[in-house]
Amino acid sequence: MRIRNSWIFSLAIGAAACSSDRAYAPPGTVLTDAQVSADVAATAGLAAAGSIEDQGQYLDNTGVSASLNTFGRLGSISSGMPVPSATNSPAHSTAPKLACSYSTLTLRWVCDPFVNAHGLTVLWAYAYFDQSGHGMPGYNLLTTEKVEYWSQLDGPVGDGATFTGTTHRKSDQLLTGLLGKETTRVWNGAGVSADTTSYHSASGSRHYAGVELDSVKSVIYRQPRTPGSYPLSGDVIRVANYSVTSTGQATETRSVSRRIVTTFNGTAAVPIRVGSTLCTLHLDTHKVDGCSGQ
Image (cartoon, rainbow, N blue to C red; front, side, top):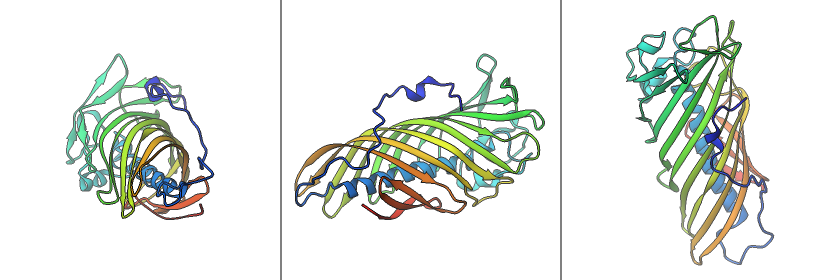
């Protein structure tokens, strides 16, 4: 996908992809490579599950849901997520309305900020394109080939128990496969995040601060899309670089780099791999568990 927004890459990081950063850990340390990988998997899994949820609950509903029988407005109503108003969408709905305005200069719809179901403040815009790549003022069942989305999310992350933190995330995602009789739709995209997270356990706390590069690779959904369905295939890949400090019995600070790959399989339980560590991400609960291998 051709990314149109250079701001996605405005935070420069070294894209190191190693999964182990040292051969020796001090005796009694809680900041082992295995612990770091498990922590990073939990953070990346939360972001990947949130991205998939967003694609169903409001991004995929932007003017292309009711007329094409995709995820449907009920998903947005039940989750409390706002959706575009009927003035800029061919679908009429009693769901909460999100005010979006069209710019003839940028050929984009730009929406007012809102707070999603997880407490993140969301700013987003979208644009329609025909098969030749020309911008369109609205969705057309016969001629719209793709929809591009730009989003910014800021606010709290974590499960409130084992880890908490904040995120500042920007992304550019492209939805394709709209022409003709649809059997599938495909998402691709890229993003960058600046996060801080803290993990707590009986042995101490671990505090992470750093930047992640995310990419969405050919994430495919079956059409028509129904509530509770999950991507058939595709990957979300995150390259993360952190400074992490462990406190408890002793204090230790180190730099870590990880490459995390989430692979979809049509179910709610999907593998998430961090180097040689393999865990399970539950897309319905956003939880990561069952880590093993390092």
